[in-house]
Length: 459
Image 1: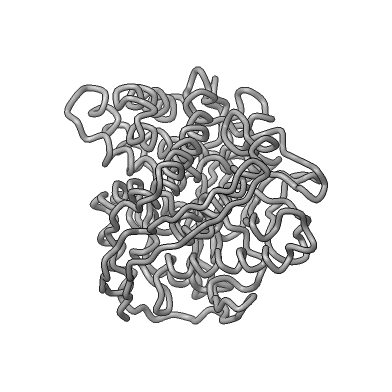
Image 2 (image 1 turned 90 degrees about the horizontal axis):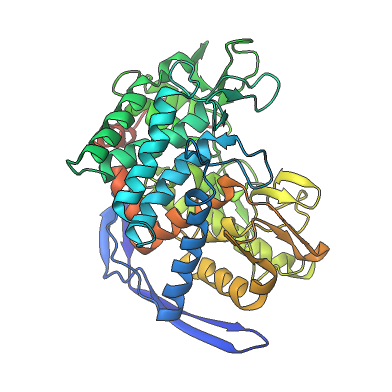
């Protein structure tokens, strides 16, 4: 399959009571490029007027403050959220925080030395004080003691998916901090140690012809609190890293039979957009963010399209859905993006369909900027020009809001804040994708996944 990209541009007009702002921007700035599906695309930095560049930078700086200023004072780990206890830290959000700190260096919010010392604080705590189970971390840790905080009654041990989000960042840290000074040398040593100690193969379950990874293990109830990690959902990085492990790699059949083996894809059309990943309409957008802060979805394909292209289609479904629902929910149309977040009736994985109640989360559209830059930038400008007074706070735009019910979340969640700056940076410069994909363990996985593999088709 040949994929052709052409130079293109767009215009956004954003109206507000104060002024009309019309911005012309050039997205990606590419000359025509021909490549095979699955190849990584090198893009030049997109060009925008100074006002847009300044706004993007301001948003990135605000969300990075969550991890820099609000991180746990003793361990440096990312706290679960502003509405949780002060010692409740989240392993997955901590991985996102590592990416954010790297972006902070690139954007000049932190010096390289400041970020390296902060990351060393985090890694020392994770390597020496944090509970681990067969090398895997729990979902929640106490940022003061390092002890597991149960996420639910039987979820008091290893969480392989949260561990994968952290491990993705560990590899990026190892590649980014490459200087020979004592701090960066220690960072590489600690990341390598923790990466090699994760026993991915311990979590393999084989049942008849099936082989797949299990999500949890508890030292108290073992496998009782469990379900298979299989797609399509937010967990692809778990299998990619399990294949890449230099010490505890899982067999390739786990990817083909487990991750892609069931409920993975169905050809369908939603709101004029043809899609295949997943089984229906109700897919929250964190599915296309969490596993891809570092792993470049342009590097592998599924059924003739790169994952990047699949994700672009899933984002377009949500854009079109918001337009169709503009008469039902306030703000929909110019604003879009449904994902897991707090709503007026509690936390929920919001998605198009019957479960939608009008709750939007800025992370959904902003973290999708690499996939649908025109639509994401348009949403960002709408947020800034029409709703900034109501929605802007200490860590950027409110975590979530429901304009139909005049509700705005008072709390920020680490896993909502976490993808925004890295994914915007992947759109602007490709930094996080470029750094992570340098890890030498990744190329063999890419070669493996580009080979045709026998196995059951998704049912």
